[in-house]
Length: 348
Image (cartoon, rainbow, N blue to C red; front, side, top):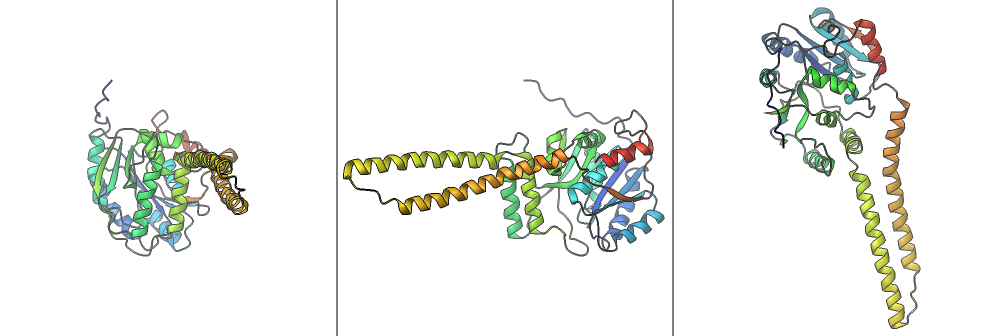
């Protein structure tokens, strides 16, 4: 067996350019505080940095807050999506537009502490290509959410060739090579936590505890979280299909056994089998099983249909502010001018 190569320090470790991506939905009350926090933290890490706020169709004063911030603050870029596409699409938009040597993904509600940026960057300097912040505890979450999270990771990692680490969210630092790998992935049904794991690369975990949310309530309801979890299950594992294949085999074996029992009962006791309750119960049971299995198959086929349509993951309605310069031609993640950048955005 060939031992894995040791992580090598990055050539640009002395002063990497940093892009911080903040997907935001109705975060007008939290964004000023988060922007101040980042403006205080980033200059100590690099003199070349940008903050990209991706507005995912907010209905509050987020556009007004960000228009003012982009005009008044250096290094702030504002992307306004044409409607609400969801957090996964907003993250994709931010990753596509980030120009730094390293890209940091954070939430716009202030729960991701800026003091984690320094140890993340230090781990990157030590050779890590992706540095993930791992929750130390979920004691601040409700029982239903904790149970649902545990169940999701258990199901998602059953038989999966690429396990998704539990406790790891979107809060992470990524090397430019990781960013380029994510940008190369073409799927429309994007489950980012699975994509982070799928691309691989040298990864390190840093423990942290999220801070209390500044203002408002999270827009992720249990219903939206359940929908995201089901997207993740169907995108990264065939476990639901395998469950129903196994259930079909068990039912077939049980029906063979029951048929043998009926034959023996008639041969030994010579009694007629009444049958009607058994038939009706069997029909109802198997009808339910068939409809449920067809529904699961339909979910996979529906995702195939979405991919075949090749609609963009997101559309940018407006863009304001100036951040880092476009990457030079030939550099990793380079785009050949503004026109190519816009073309890449439309392709998404």
